[in-house]
Image 1: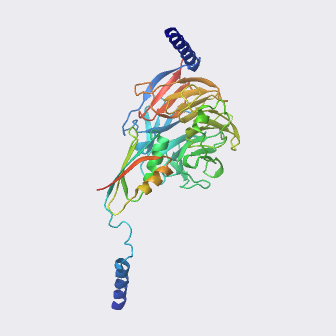
Image 2 (image 1 turned 90 degrees about the vertical axis):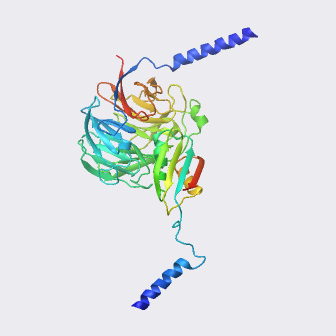
Image 3 (image 1 turned 180 degrees about the vertical axis):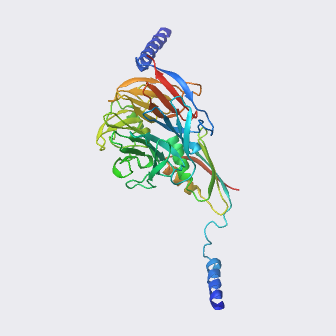
Length: 106
Length: 327
């Protein structure tokens, strides 16, 4: 029984600490603040569409859309991360061309 | 030289005058009558209302989108009841969008984020729900406008799939048509030269209405036009095109049809209502941008009562406005 437990712990350790093996993605990522500017963000058909697609980003919270400014802000929680490419893909999927994407580590 | 300039200015003035005369609303005129609702979350208040429908008794049903609910109001805007709540599941909404009432008074509501349609009794009791995210039969990617024909068949604008889907009143799939295809902006402006562009295809089509003789009118929003089909999806004709003047749109949004078959189309960025005959001939227009009573800012939903009242959902102003025809 003890032997089994040691083998399991050993294998788990190997999985986590073997050099070159990637750690589980994003576990150590810190929170991010994302600010996106897009053109043509004035009608509900488009604003709601963009909101819906952005809500699917993992770790997304505090999504705010300012229609007048054509600006979207959101936060990504600790332990998750997004890249500009991820955001770009989502914005384009929603039918927009991103004008600027700004990602800050918190 | 100065004489020449004066002549040119004079001619320009006359041209503009003639254009203004031609572009005016024709004989029929509508006057502002009443504001219903204001921004808020209490009973009778609204937060980004998106669509409106009316039943045979004159009760109004409004998708109060940011309050995650449907409100039922009487014809003067007095609160009757509400239902909904935020979430995913029977009776819940994440983003209630389109709304329609069938002959029996049942209410259909599309949910833009949850990708389903829900059917309720006139007093808001949940009856059934269908749909999920996807692009297969009976699946949606942001269902928006919704309409019911004389046989209680339900038509849904499947916005991000750029198509119409047709169901029976129990949500069983019958047919789908359309496809993504943008009309070039220059061709759209010059639609009097290119009248039949990309027939049967759509580009982010938002709303839909059924005429008394069961023709399907689609507000093909980002192609700035209306397209008309049979109930089986056969293309018939289209009108519109991008522009500021009469008969043109800058994002066609809500659409409804009166008992005579006249079509009322909301023009989102031009902040106005336009009225056409059933075959697309311009009758009149009214509305201008603003937040004071009688003005509009991004209208999205429209319905008519039996007394000739026109109810317009004024999305950005978080209210409904009623207009009446001048006798």
